[in-house]
Length: 135
Ligand code: FES
Image (cartoon, rainbow, N blue to C red):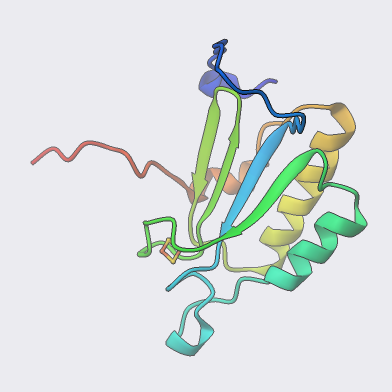
């Protein structure tokens, strides 16, 4: 996996092992705020994403989870992407072309066998939910 400066190789033994090995996990928030169109928030195309993931054969390689609230509700719509030694939080994913880019990136990552760096267009969507408050 090549994630630039975010790359941290971790090797750790645990008591359990899963038979299901994925190269990454994409969590798309569809909680109390993300996708809450009735509250004036942008739509999360949940059904479209599920269909794209299925029709493109991504399910066995990159886990897609539609989640309840991930926490940072002030930045809807939130997407969390994780892989060994890598985590990216994206916020304000609002346009259909952004979701299309996410699917395209997932397909390209599946083809190569590891998560590629996220497209540049997502750089301004990234944030850190764990930063320590200065005050
Ligand atoms: S509803 Fe998405 S972060 Fe809270």
